[in-house]
Length: 160
Image (cartoon, rainbow, N blue to C red; front, top):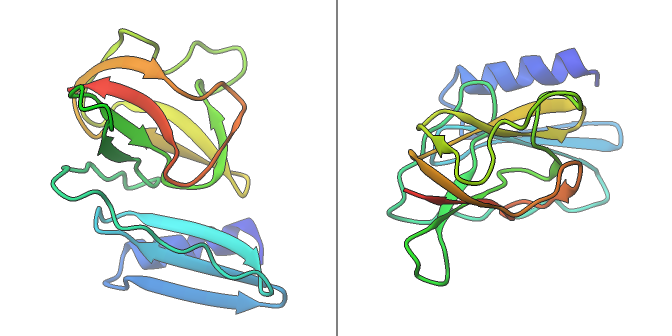
């Protein structure tokens, strides 16, 4: 399966009422899953490896979906400080800027609006723009540029 076929599958699921589609071709299995936020997550694993279990989004948190990429989950910070954690919606590589020579999308003390791009996560050679789900101020960037990021791993702390 090539990149164009995967993009077509994502478009089909995005433009339909499907909540999940599982496609197996040879040793690969692709699961396209629509989350409560209305976005698509993509996972590609060898057929012998079980798919990654899904985790329900944190209740009572409003989400802003992106038509072009999965959005991050905003989770309340465990310390109870009123800060929200912006978590990775997928496994991949975290990038703070669109290219190595460019300035980061956001930094500490930057004010962001709902829908502003915070970072890019590269997964399966696809660049997924992660958008802010709430307006506020970036308090902390928790991941270094170019580092791997896990599903639901906090990337940013934001003060709404």
